[in-house]
Image 1 (cartoon, helix red, strand yellow):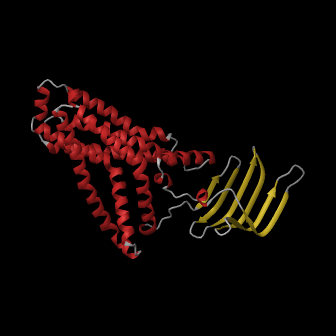
Image 2 (cartoon, rainbow, N blue to C red):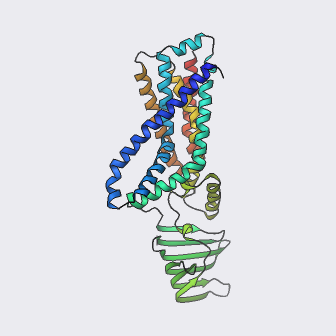
Image 3 (cartoon, rainbow, N blue to C red):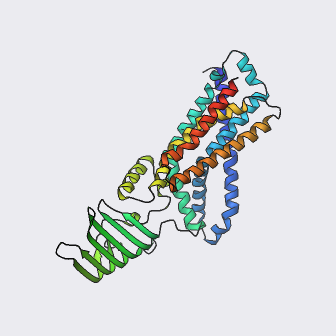
Length: 357
């Protein structure tokens, strides 16, 4: 690379790093001010609090890195434009496409870092962050506990009207085994309790019905101990389960949940696809940021920063909206996750063509 490439690349990476070092502590301070009373009320140990904020740092930086990257590029590129450095570079015979090379090298480095974090670091941080949050900071349940329905194998289905993970107890339990479209066996119980000592389930007011051609066979007991082919996480996986898994583990988990007909499969797919889409956004946001800020404007850096911040928050807004649509609507998750990148890629190409003129 030439000296100019090193110069721009160094500014690219240093400004992005400074943005992270500036805004992440601000986020921590705001979070502490909002949650310190809850931590004190719940007597959260200092070791867990420190670990929480370490996880929070990784989680927060990963979640908002597109904004930090976008603003940092606009900041230092606007300074280059205001100092007429860009004019000097282009006047020396370097084309605008050639001028973009160090930006793309920087975007590649940031993308690789973001992919590594998404695949390996963020899942662990997400687990620690969410475990602490549900333990000390919120009263909502970390697990689905009402009207839980699961397909545990190709032909077996289970249902409980409510389930308490802390007591390992479910109510109005039902398990059905199908033979094609016909019911083969049905087990019901008013209450099902996990027995960790025997690694089995205890069913209260147990009823088993075997459907036969010549008549049904009934078995009824007030209490029955059974070894059933599902575990507690099959009944009530944590709502943030997908966020805590590394790439291979997540793919296996999704395949398992798809075979069971999980109602949360779109949520898990959105998490998977965003592991790729968010890092790739580094290239798109780099193009837009350079296109917006490479021209010297009458209002100076303030105008560029205002435009940049507005576009960054619009991108995040789009990302959140379409993630929710991917989780809860008929839009395929892969399309919903990539729509913000596609829309902003088109915008980036348009702005880049105008910037070259």
